Structures are given as structure tokens and as C-alpha cells.
Amino acid sequence: MNPIPNLIEKINAQKLWDKKLELKRNEYLKVKGTIDTNLYLILNGSLRIFVVDQYEEHTIRFGYRDNLIAALDSFLSDQPSELYIQALKKTTLKVISKSAYKAFIASTDENRKLWETILESFALQQMERERDILTTSPLERYNRVLKRSPQLFQEIPNKYIASYLRMTPETLSRIKKS
Amino acid sequence: MNPIPNLIEKINAQKLWDKKLELKRNEYLKVKGTIDTNLYLILNGSLRIFVVDQYEEHTIRFGYRDNLIAALDSFLSDQPSELYIQALKKTTLKVISKSAYKAFIASTDENRKLWETILESFALQQMERERDILTTSPLERYNRVLKRSPQLFQEIPNKYIASYLRMTPETLSRIKKS
DNA sequence: AAAAAACATTGACTTTTGTAAAAAGCAAAT
DNA sequence: ATTTGCTTTTTACAAAAGTCAATGTTTTTT
Image (cartoon, rainbow over all chains, first blue to last red; front, side, top):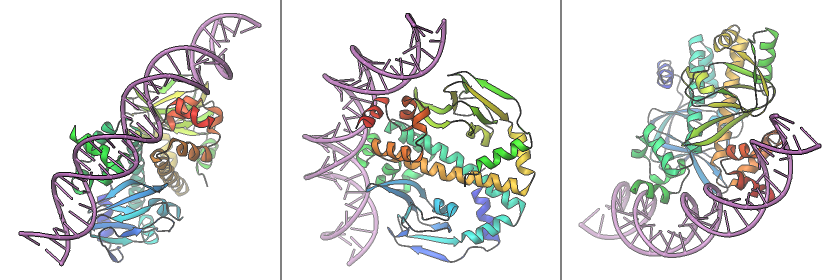
């Protein structure tokens, strides 16, 4: 199903993780304009990935424990990234460099296939996300994401959820009341 | 750079295209709820891919001459697709089935690598698209897409461009005037 | 070429969502 | 336990975009 846990298992088994990393609440793992081609595994804590559009932040993704995260634009293109990644609470990460990761992926056919599957499911997720954002009514946007990711509404402050749902915290608050 | 023309070249060279297909203006290549795992090459004409959200259509992509298109959700998952694909004018396509395509991709390392590159650039494009849609101001959404895809504003009726840009045709018309 | 259909523009109006500011609620930290 | 600092909620108001309807304009069809 979800190929990521498999991937993590295998990287664990081969002890390919590099150093461990600690972020304090609100600390940035990365800011716009820098290249970061690492892949990170979240051991504990949570963070958000956002972009800035004319002084306005738009959250595009959250990461929790056991999630793999990256500045994917930079990871894929080796170019400076548009993304900010910020810890929402004290967060511990393990790191693997792109080169180590690529070597791992290229080492067996099974691994190559695994990466292909991950890219394919990312494409599917992004198509879902596109629909989420395009949905006109804030209430429906809320319902779609609530249904698919109820856990989100536990750990994450509403102001970031609102940003993820393309609405203000005020609008989200009004929706939840009704 | 863009890996798709290479892919098309190779499929041409090996004469892997199956039958040719003709669509009249406004005719549907596919509607929601059906499985379609084919890949299509547009020889002539143009079409749009859209989803329907509560009786409202949202255009998510256009296809022109020499573009490869598919109901990508269905293609990747083998499940019924959410997508509608409709010709915007008389359109001619060539078809390759997923099984033939997969066989082609699996046939050499170079082909496997090519597919990986295509998936990666699709991921990057979808991230751009996510930013496009998230951008708050309709004027900026317009400017972003105009800059990246000026050709779009030639061939495609404004009402579909408006739908792609998440605004009404009236709003798009007002933007263009100012 | 004419007629019909589809599309684009415009204006008046309505609705929705955003903004700003204040109050209330919570949670962490001393 | 109390204070301090966020976060959420609430209200009033403003602004932006959507709706509707009418009029032009372009494109397609006959």
C-alpha cells in the first residue's frame, strides 16, 4: 500500500542514516533560497512545510513522527528551494543525504521499483491535494481533509490548518462552530 | 530538460502506438467513474482535463499537439478515475496501452531511468501548480501562469483558462482589462 | 453568407471571506 | 498557583470576488 514504511525499514536495516538532528519549537530546518537535498525521517515532534507568497505563508504539508520529509523541489532538482520547513514543537530527525539515498536506490532492482512506486504515489497524492485546494467552498475543503486526515486536527494548531486549507483562522473557526 | 519528447521519439521509433483516435469538438475521451489506463499522444487539436466538485467544473490541465496525456490517476492506480477529458476542438490522438507502455519502460535501463525522470518532473510541476492555485490574488495567479505558459492564452477559450486559474470568466475578463 | 451558437464583456448588485481589534481560553513556565 | 504568551473565538466592518442579466463579439454551423 503505502511504500514509505518499507523504504524506511530498509534504510534502517542497512544503517544508512547519517547524523541525528534536534530542532527547538519554531526553529527552521530550512528557509527559502537554500539548497537542501537531504531526506529526513521524523523520530519525534512535528513540522510544517510552507511557501511565502507576498508576505503570506501557505502551508503545503505537515510532517509527524515516522514521516519522511524533504525540500522535495530541491531534492529533485538540486536547485535552491522555495520551501521553508519549520518545527512546530521540539523535533528530532535522522538524515540521509541524496547521494547516499540514490546509491541505496540504485543498488537493487527492488529498490529502484520501490522508488518508482513512491514517486507514483506522490503524484497521486498531489492530484488529491490539487482537488482539495481547488474545491470552492471552505466548508467542503475542510470536510475533504478532515475525512482523509483526521489525525491532523489533533496535533496541529488551527492557524496552520487554516493556512493549509487556504482560509483564515477566523473562517476555520466559523466553520467548526456550525 | 523536458524528458517527454525523448519518450515520444522512442515510442515512435519502435512503432508501439496502437490505433488512432478522432474526437469531435466537445466530445469526451473519458468521463468520471471509468477506468482508462491508456496513454495518449495528441497529434492535432487540444483538450482539457477537469474534475467536477458539486456541479462545478475545475480544469486541472490542458493538452495540445505533441503533448502526452492520460487519466493519470487511473493510469497509476488502475482504479476508476475522477477525471473528465474533453476535446476543445477536433482532435486526433494516438494510443498506447499501459501494458505495452510498461513493457517498453521495463525493456531497458535507459527507459526505466526515463520514466523515473518523467515522474520526478511531474512531481515538480505539481508543486508549481500547487503554488499557482494557492496564490491568493487572482491577478498574481494570472501573472504566474501567463509567464510560464503564454501559449495557453492563444489556443484556449477564456472560460476554461478562468476555470484553470480558479476564478470566474468575469474576474479574468476584468483582470485582462486592467 | 447568413444564422445560430458560443463566448466575452460590462454593470449593478449580493454574498462571501478577509481584516482588525478585543476578549476569552489554554498551556507552558516560573 | 499565577503569570505570561500564544491561540482561538467573536464581533463589526470592509473589500474582494461571485452572480445575474444584458449586450457585444467571435466562431461555428448550415
